[in-house]
Image (tube, rainbow, N blue to C red):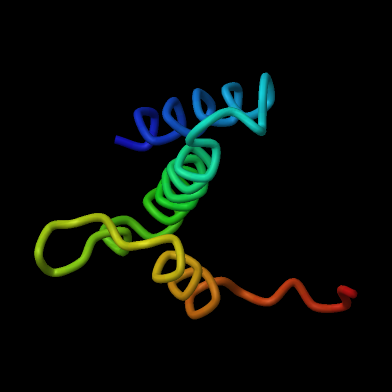
Length: 77
């Protein structure tokens, strides 16, 4: 599943790269962000990308998973 999410992220990023002001660009950005985060979360913490209802978590919820689960790098900015 990660490869499908990564593909959708790449596809959306390419669309935005070609014309970031096209009609529907905000929706394409949201799709790219959600799929990119889902691919990261699925790879690092399998199963954490889903809600109980079997729906993919929102970008904000996926960011919460990363914030809660990732180890701090330390010494950063």
